[in-house]
Image (cartoon, rainbow, N blue to C red; front, side, top):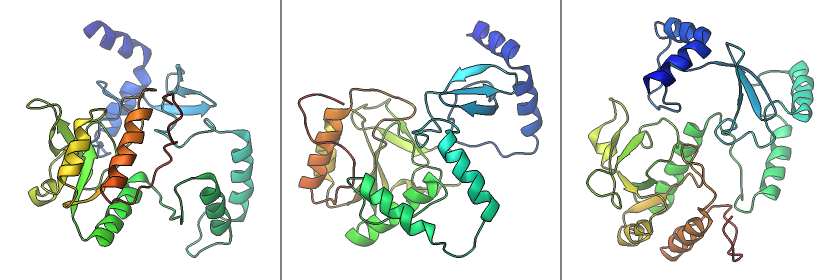
Length: 253
């Protein structure tokens, strides 16, 4: 491993300097999105590739951890962004374009009925959990080990598979999360059918079950059947299912 670290240091001296400087002034995030001795810093990207502060080029398999379905800086969106920036960068009141975009999103997504625009995934999952609790009158939240859902108190949890991988323990990824909050979370095993039994057993306590279908930290192509069965189990337990998981086709997507 030391050889890898030495090679990394030789490849990314500028990133190492930036990290040392930033550590003095920037609060480093709790969630370890990239497990390295220090972060490498991306400076530009196009299509499927990005460059770091030392000019090294990488193939980006995460695409902004999900949303960049057209790749980095696609010409069509960059042009529209430039035109829009000439009109305004920030408006404190609603604009007429929100509804038009929302209609397109509902048309494109098999699960959407209404749209709320959020600045981050943290904000989106925070609202989703609150809505689920309001609708069900229950408070417990089920999360899957290995998933990422943002950085607010209810989702900044880390699984522990030591005692029983099929029923993971969990704990906050950092200090400052009350024990009462931690107790409102139930961790489920990812790609393990025992998760279905846990959901059935605790269905009267759960406000919702949240999953990152294809985990950004564990990208795989063999999760289709698991997701479809999860959808069926949640529906059978009385949950309102919102997902884009396709119906069974005889093959795993």
